[in-house]
Figure 1 (cartoon, one colour):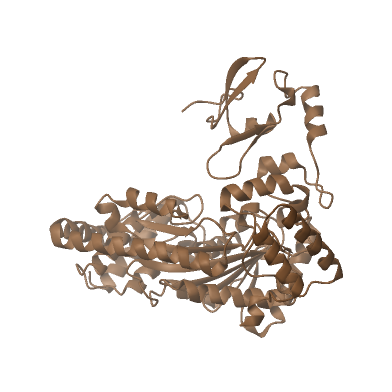
Figure 2: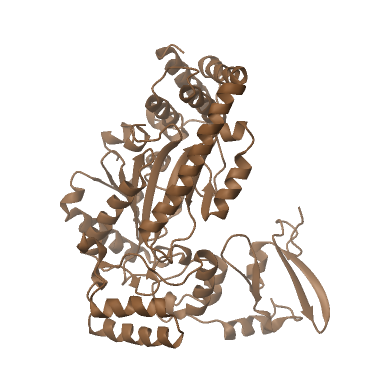
Length: 351
Length: 172
């Protein structure tokens, strides 16, 4: 079972980091595998169990991971697994995988190490705002820690060997969760994202790989992971993200100056729907919260605190809603409870 | 949306033009049917066709002859047994040994995705000081890199052998 910590807002959603007006969070992950084992998809069930034990024992022997939670998905209720995926501690692939697999997490989900997902080890660090160097520093230290007690699959020419060859080399992915509503409103998003792609940065939706764009949230990450040092990939992707941030801020400024009435209309309509709707579907809810978030950062509304908005967004995700009520629900019931949750939030903040 | 010529159910996202005995024919397939017919696709962005295991071109690839020909052409990783055809169809590797077993195919993919086949980032801690076996392997790789005139890679391997290229985490 997940302990009490699961209810706390993940630190990367706290909105306490730098540049959170545009960058919600930064994530860095490293993919690693044990040298003497087959990759997870080709492991037998006993071998997967052995891998899980070897890795968790290695982590437990390090003081760095004292107080961390060791969550084996094979013994967690499905709802708990899905809630962890909604918090980005796990992934859709981890849900689908078989046997002993899971996540070791601590520090309010700042560090989440997935075991037996696509690779044996996925070291991840999530930070609020735009903090690429700090996130990279954390995963690199953890990588050194793990590498000192486990033999990692590595080849001097190809670097770290991974289940999917496209991740080999550094095994690094740095991604930024960005909120770009003004670029959408000014209809310049396609052009910006096209330019970003040409600069070697991949664009994904709100929930990561294969997901749709919802509420103007985009994930931008490095495409290549081989042929340069990790710091270079981090700096290059960061550079592109900084340029996108600048463009988004410019677009916000021009909307405030040239189309304030339309912006106010959009934000207050969102406030109205969040306060009075009786049924709220997930995508609609995220879009409304996105408009409210834009209103906050453009000075249209002064409440709530942005971190609390993130909290509401997390609470409105389906597994979280069901965890809160302690039971499974159908879509209609979820939509009804989501509207109730939004309504009480808006009343609490008197918006 | 064009449907798959083979199953007629899924969307065709692989468009193949074959030239057999001077005659051109087109085929539109979904991923699944393409896999069944032994047609390999690249694993990069998009679904670009690079090669056809086409020894059976013009014959029925699902027939006995086609299957046997594919089996003959297939290779397996000596460590985990993964077949090259499985790697091409599913896109994942079975074990670290697959990187040697399917070296050419993987290099082709890496160049397309990363624009490079040479790792320049941090080293595994356990590889910081190469052991005897590792040294021999590295020397062989160094010779190969020099033969290939890949001097950038040769310099990296030379440094590892000299021990001057330390593990980054230790240097900090």
